[in-house]
Image (cartoon, rainbow, N blue to C red):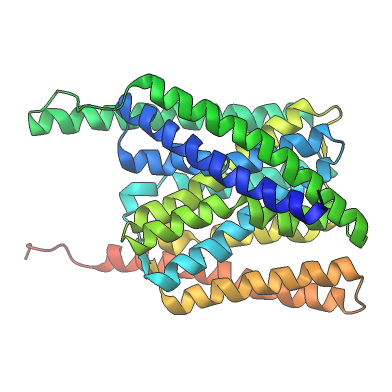
Length: 361
């Protein structure tokens, strides 16, 4: 089979496997009393990121760890700029502050921690273990808080019973089938992507930052766009945030811990891609902290940012003479975007503090 055929077949198997995985995981999560909203922020988000995990682990075992790093960094940038941009074009996104007041700071902290850990151009095995331990702590807290809230809601409603759910074995079968599909699809996808990169003379890093990052993010694209179309704006945004947390803590944590000598990080990733990932994470602040939203105009700005970022990768791959100038222009587009996010957050906080309490004289 041709390299393009392997790429397409692997992607199809990945998406189908991820769908089974998400459905099985969601059913089991509901069975143990986790609310649908928290399932969207954790189980669904992590499930849709399973292709990135499988691709990165497979790439590491095949001796191309730079593809794993590029896949995670590229996917996180793609999630914020492209997926949130497309979802906000469908409907302006507004989020309740109580929903994710913890998740977005964690997402920003994960991006910052990764940047600091990679400052020596390598994510050491011990640092990978720390990242994965952070994921375990985060999931434990999320499940504990969700179950406590579910019990409180049940007592408030006077309903302590449990609704009927599908048998546990069905969820387990779907989980197993989904995981098998993800493993097979990731292997085909990595083979096809690597063959294409070799034939075109493009580095594995560039392929990871573009084709693999966008391809393995298709489950997130489908989930967030469908959620936006159906009016579930919190699920659309929560899926992106949860996926970005999972990508750093789990994917790079596991691959870093399992790779002898740790994961290598190219200087170009350290000086450009990681700052962009951190900047676009901070740009989410007005949405997730202040309770503001992403308008359609801001959605267009996010999509323009992704086009600019992709253009940089093309310039970099072709060795264009104007790469330094284009890199500076792109960074100075994304950094003000993050600055605007911080400014809007500060203004919203100041207005709430300055507003007199209602109902008092």
